Image (cartoon, rainbow, N blue to C red; front, side, top):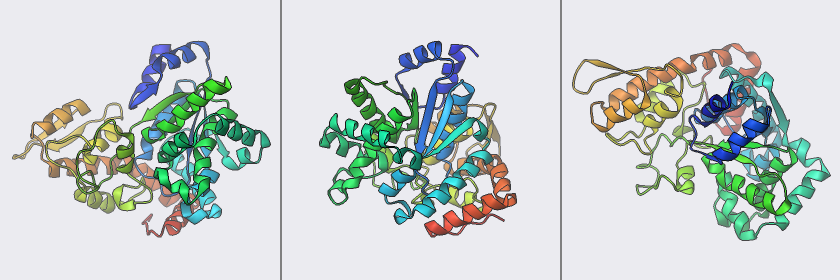
Length: 367
């Protein structure tokens, strides 16, 4: 695979790469760069996470040696499951099954529990050095990476350690590439700033889009949302802690249809429209995908071959929101069918999913 093909693989379905020029040089000079993504094992796997999961596969296909950091201690600091470490570690096992069910090559991924990092004095040396080279104001500003407001550290100072740990994760693992949703941008930029001061490697950041909550903008705080406002975008994303706002990868057919039927989907509007985004980032991200949808006001069906085509037709009011919802639900059910089958047939995966659901106070159907 040549460099341009590797770049195409890594770039597709991303919001930004900081920087593309650095990435190109890396790929030209290092046949096996090291990449990672850190995630909090904090709930059931939803379709928003499919975006970064697929990007992990793209990076592996492009020759990147990939690590997934099970951010168990990070989740503890972030009060996930009320700080219940058993629940956090159980969820980490469940997430491995989820990735496998989605077709991600887990056998090519190194999974590291944050327990390994925090048990090493060298790691805490990096945390202290990072703290010495940034300000309190900068750390507070970075708290949005964990879904927290800047003033939340006033009542729990451990929150300030979180961004320092995320920076130190990258230093400790000696990474070239950091993958994350757009909401992780501030952590990655903080690492690049501190790296310059410590004369260490600046990580190349690959940021994927965040899916808007099924409740949408209109039901989650009104309009006036800017497309470049990271905090506002992150606040409106699908969330494991708000199961009504998202679709789980193993949701049954009826649940998917019902959730999509109720979803926010204003006519002719594509920005912060969750149904449009599911098509853009989940469905049409599949090579060769076609969406069959009814033309507004008729019994004629259109076969749409690209997201750009769908967007144009939707803005022009040629497709009604209700018809788009119906077609989207059918397509999503089809691509998630192997996942649901896996969880219904694999005893360990099913039991782990049910335990995680119980920790979240949810009931799920995996029969």
